[in-house]
Length: 148
Image (cartoon, rainbow, N blue to C red; front, top):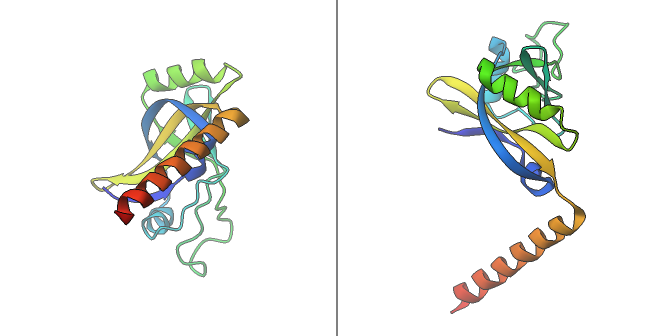
């Protein structure tokens, strides 16, 4: 299992409540582009409309720019493949104003490309500061331990 793209800022900016694994509906050239590591999840999010979930603002540039169709949009909405039960859970929690659904990482599972999405709650500024302090303390301990 290898990671193709990861949303690193998500762990810092949000508190993860629950994670889901979803498939993505992709074109053939998009699959090649993802496998070559060109996908970006920065600024992307998930919405649930009706009985379907969509990945919005995920950037997948063309694999070979000269061979792609003229109407190809790298930021197009991509449908996520989830069970009805998972979609119902996400739809119910999305109504809550303080919760958001964001993509965490894209990876392969066998020959399939999967997307890990998470139901998250935004962190306050003081929580982010605490995380920074904790990370700095751990780094200092590692430096001291390595020096001995």
